[in-house]
Image 1: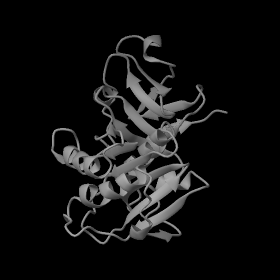
Image 2: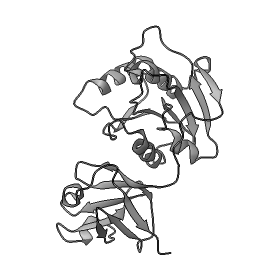
Image 3: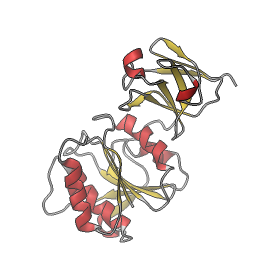
Length: 242
């Protein structure tokens, strides 16, 4: 299985171009579109999202992760094995949180480039063929070199900021699950806790631990982003009482 995680969006041709390359090199592998709306140019937010999502996928799967504002510069390209799952992408911090949260992590630098490669689309030309090879069980050892650590490493502890706003206007944070009596504040508002949307009134704001284990701010049948003015990067205060 190949899992796509990018900031490409869905209105442009980039996802289709990557899938075409994957179909060429790994035609029998299922491809899952996990997320193509990772916050633009933001590998820091992407790193915490990717780490949260990864546990929901089976060991052996290969994530093709592309949030790559430095494409075409001397930044390196890497393969990471962490928690039994593979990750292929840029060495710009995007893979660093998932790498740091596992004790079995191994890392390789991608030393290969195809004869024809776009300076602005390594996701298609470099990452996709490598991910395809790994997914079909043909580890490309001749195209990789083992390394001790990534060049760019973000702090792997919780990130007390908004890292994603979904189309409902729910604000995901980089804070992992906390007890229900925690005090959660963002945008100058103290949010109460609820287990789910239906336990609060229409238009009422609350926080909960979402399906991938992150603290999320929401409004029942409304947009927390619009009501409270929340956006990616905004600080969130979480006070644990126990």
